[in-house]
Length: 77
Image 1 (cartoon, helix red, strand yellow):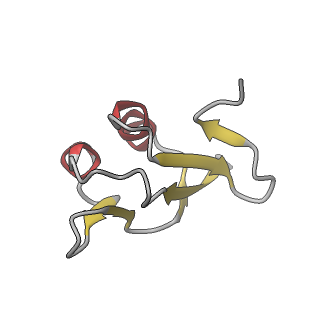
Image 2 (image 1 turned 135 degrees about the vertical axis):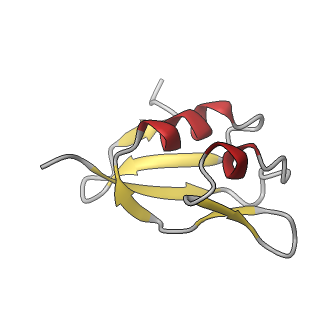
Image 3 (image 1 turned 180 degrees about the vertical axis):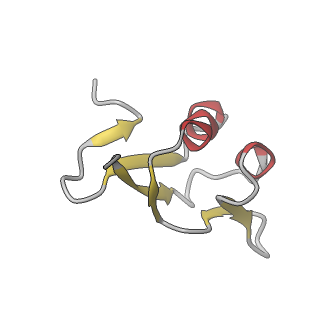
């Protein structure tokens, strides 16, 4: 069985660029305030979601392993 992730968007950082929505339209949505949020906060590990997090211009998307809370992105320094 593969990893499960918890996806969060820091709304204090999100600038509404919508890059995540364009990269993974089913995983992210913009709300009426033009800020991103995950369609499903708990999801199977997915390379496209990771690419969206890595491509966020303000690193507002955080991914952790479901259960342990271990960071996937951004990685711990």
